[in-house]
Image 1 (cartoon, one colour):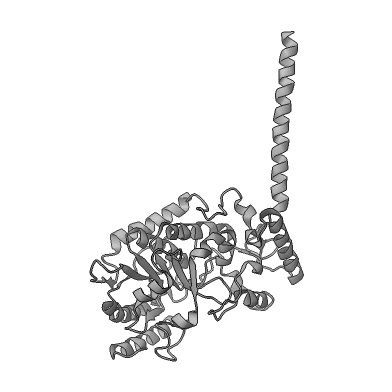
Image 2 (cartoon, rainbow, N blue to C red):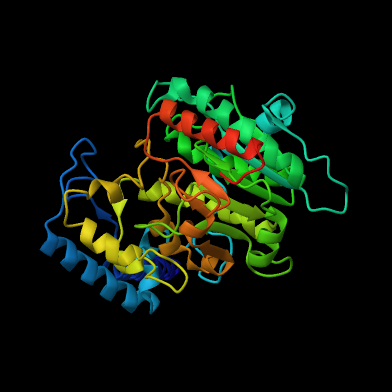
Length: 396
């Protein structure tokens, strides 16, 4: 009798185990078949990163359409194009996307340690402002890559010219400025341009009210520009608007000028941007996730994306989300905002043509000049010309 009872219990237990396993398998298969995967550069890209071919246009469009349909089945919205990559980790209600992993934590802590140890010796100046003003810090990164590339050894020449110009404006507007120099690259597994995310985070954690990252080939060209009034008009204190960037031709926004208000959500945005983007390196997402042209912005990323993806300039899109391409507009922003649309309510995108211009033409038309697409020596020469102009109390 006891033997039969044990045998019945064993059968019942085995049945429960089989049911649990079958149920889990069904759930897994449902998720696998209803959540889309990334679109690599080509069908072999995931397995062979040394090969960079491309999908045919028809295959690409079919894959895009399938992803949109699948995402609608799973999420009810095309925003969730890549939800399957991080299912169970991403909060669609806007909560923190991922627990900070160890590698991200190390990079961000290294940036903060560098700030604490070196901010007093980095080239720049303090604001000398009274305590009632918001504490505003502008900074750039002048550190050299470990492998000489893209004029890396000439960046000191460029940064010296920038510093002279920023001193004129910063002294009048009671704004602090620092150039991150003579420190090792934070993360050698990524292009140096990713460092800006960690250093913005580090300066905010050190108590600055507003942190403004500016590319090294840029400077404020109008000494009368009141950055505090500008920030207050676009990122009012107490509003949900917390970070600002300029529009970009084929992405959500540029990364050459980023203004951030001190807030817990700003810190989370920076952490998630750095960490979540890693899973997308070497990938493309459907253009349907890009923003379309909006009133007040000159660019239409979705329209440009569609045209570029079938042209010889396809690489302009591909290198924006890569661990290794040394491209200053790299940031995986289309991919990042596709899985984290909640942050878009905190983002302000302004017309790039209204904030900065890329040449010395039309002096005084924008507060910032951003000398793009020249050699380091040419960029330094243009910034020096601008410095001489504002020294004469004229707008550059």
